[in-house]
Length: 130
Image 1 (cartoon, rainbow, N blue to C red):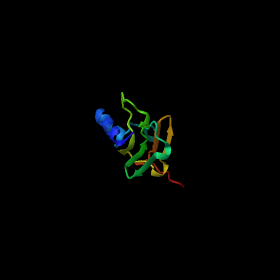
Image 2 (image 1 turned 120 degrees about the horizontal axis):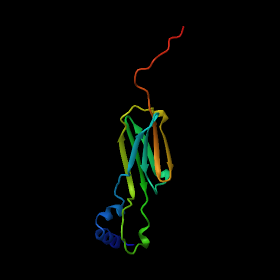
Image 3 (image 1 turned 30 degrees about the horizontal axis):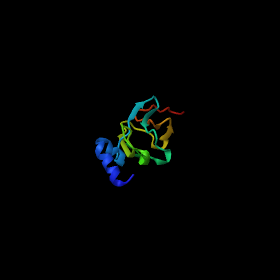
């Protein structure tokens, strides 16, 4: 598809054109707490694990990556375009203390699951040895 034809396709479909161009988007996120950890689930269907970056900086969790756009060379007429593609990023402030060294990330079934183990901060009883 030539650039000229692609531009007219973008104009014709208004807001969908941004998604076709690969402008930045934000995946949906669930955050929940278990007894031992804070768990962040990010909806990333179609994103390859090698295209993901997970970083922890202080109290901020940053998830970034890219979902490739569908091959537009065969598109004759676009009827609906709701699945975002292109680069994405989510920055989440983590409200509880966690063990940075124990953070893990796992991709399965279209979800990235990041587990941040809780770190104890409250009073702790120390036994006295005799």
